[in-house]
Length: 194
Image (cartoon, rainbow, N blue to C red; front, side, top):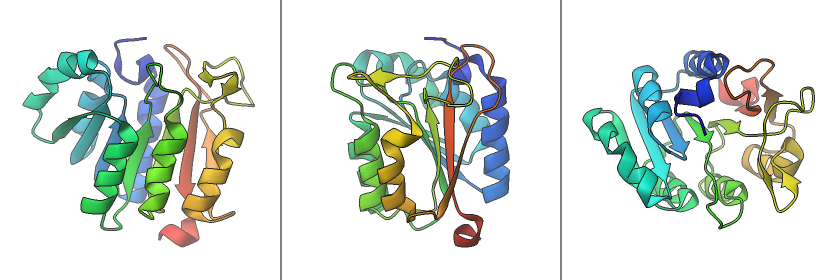
């Protein structure tokens, strides 16, 4: 793993900033804090950053983030904290959800994370899914759990439940630098958002 933010991919940072401006997003939730470098960069772009880490060692290593007044660090299962956010804090305002959690032997967290968003009807959130298969460019790195690649096909059923069938737009990163990781972006359909 790369210690630089966004796996050293400035194209990803630029796209996230464009989404922030386009959808007037104030809050970002990151699953998978690791060293905290991505959360720190996000704190310079967004008013509020919530970052969730399941691994206690990584959580402790990112303690330096506590100096940033707009960053909240949470320790534990990302789907649990997404559910809590949905119940207590979600008021229908858009949020960018940067899904980059890894399992640490507990299986792929992605479906559980999406289920928490579905359960709380968080349908105007923008999703950025890191480590995803990019069909137009399969040379970009992606995660595989139990021989199943993280891909649009893997989560399309969840996306249909979250946004409604055909009521969202998805696309992949066209360029990547650094670790050259695949990324899937999902936004509500324009007519549903604005």
